Length: 254
Length: 330
Image (cartoon, rainbow over all chains, first blue to last red; front, side, top):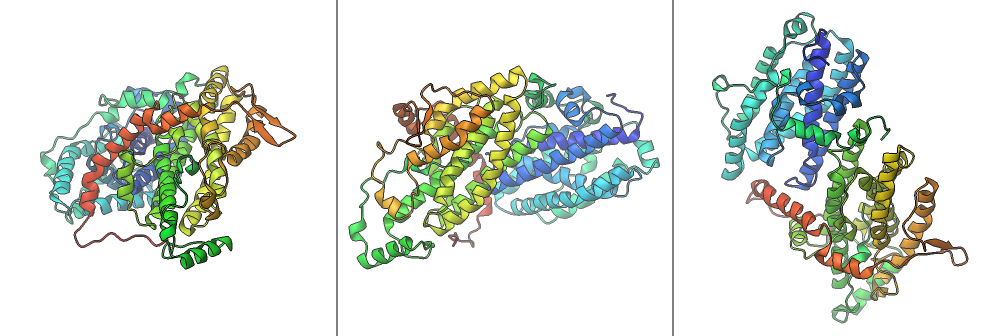
C-alpha cells in the first residue's frame, strides 16, 4: 500500500475511508460517557454511520485491487494511514468532540455532495446515498453548536476555546497529495481548495448564529502531515487497541 | 439486557403504610389489577406501589447504562468490521433502553437527574453481574448471549405486569433484546467452533461468568423475603427460582450443544420434577458484591461519576430559567 498511489481514485478513497474509520472509532468512545444519554446514543449512531461509510470505501478499494476491508482496517500501522490528524485526536471533553464533529461533518457533507457527480460512477453512486446520512450529522452538529454557542457564559467560553484549538487541525482536512491535479482534471472530485472555500462559507453561516467568533482563518497554520502518513502520537495506540483481538489470530473467523 | 429487578427488591414489611391508604380506593385498585387492567401515571395508586415500582424501574434503567460499560470497552477492540458495527449497535440499544426506562420511572415522580445522582451516591442499585470484569472479547460475548438471555426471561414476565408505562417500555426492549440474543449466540458459536485460541477463550470466559449467571435472578425463593403483595399487585411476575429454572432449561442444552462445558459438576435436570439441580451459589459473596465490595463496583461508579461531572456544564447550558421540568405522562 504505497502512500502515493498511481491511481488517483485509490489515493482519494484511502483518505476518505481512513478519516471515516478513525473518527467513527473515536465517536464510539463516547459510549457511557455522554453529558446526556441522548448524546451517547447520537454519537453512537454517527459512529456506526462512519464505520459503514469507511467499509463502503474500503470495499470499493478492494474492487480496485487493494486488500480486504478487514485486512486494510485492522492490520496497517500509523504511517500507512492517510487520515487527517483532526480525526485521531482523543475525544477529550464534549466541547472538543462536538466542535470536531461540526467542523469535520460540514466538510464531509460538502465533499460527498460534490462526489455525487464524480466521473467515477461507483463512487458517485455511493456518494448520492451517503450524503443523505451526512445531512443528519451536520444537522445534529448545527443544533448543538447553536444551542451551546448561545447558552451560558461557561458554555460559550468552552466552545470558543475548542473552536480556536480545533480549527488548525480542521484545515488539515484539505491537505493535498501529489494526485490532486489529476483528481481534479479527471473529474473525480472538485478538489480540496474548492471544498475548503465551500466549507468556510458553510461553517461561517452557522457560527454567525451563535455568540462564537470565527477566528481569521488566513492567520492560522493548518496542521498537515496526516495525508502523507505523518500522525500524532495518538493514532498508533488507537490502532493497537482496535486490532488487539483481531491480531490474536488474523486468519480466524471472528 | 439486565432483568433481575427482583435481585434488590426489599419489600421490608409488605404492609408498610397500607393502613393509611383509603380502603375503597385500594380495593378498586386491586380489583383493576386482578381484572388485568394497566395502571397509568395519573391513576390513583398506593404509596407502596409507587415506591416499589420506582425502585424497580430505576434499578433496571441503571443496569442498562452500567451494563453498557463492560461491553462498551470491547467496541474499540471488536475484531473486524462486522463485529465492530454490531457491538456498537448492541451497546447503543442498551443505552436506549436506559432512556426509555428512566422516562417510565419519571412518570412516577422522580427525575432522571435525581436517579443518576442516587446511582453515583450508591443509594440505588443495579444488576450485580456488572460488578464483574470482562477481561477478554469472549467475556463480552458471554454477556451478549447469556446475560441478555436471562434478561429476556425476566423482562418477558415483567412485561405482563400492571404498570402501563413500564410494560410498554419492556415490550420494546424485549424486541431489541431478541436481536442481541442472536448476535451473542452467533459470536459465541464462532468462538466455540473456531481456532484453539478462540475455543480456549470462550470456555474460560464461560467458566468465569457462570457463578455470576447463576446469581442473576437473585436469591433462592426459600431465602427471599415476603413478596406476596408485589405478586398480587403484579409488580413482580415470577419468582427468582422460576426464572432461573426457565433460563437453565432454555440455555444449558444450547451451551452443551456447541461443545462447551459448565463448571458445576452437580448441574443436571431432574427429569421427574422438571427442575434443574445445581450447586447452591455463594449468596454470601453475592451480598458482599451487591453491597459494594465486588471487583468492579468502584470502577463502574467512577466512570458514571466522571461522565456526570464532565457533562454537568452541558446540562446547565441546556437549562433556561423559562423552562420548567415536566414529568412525562407515559
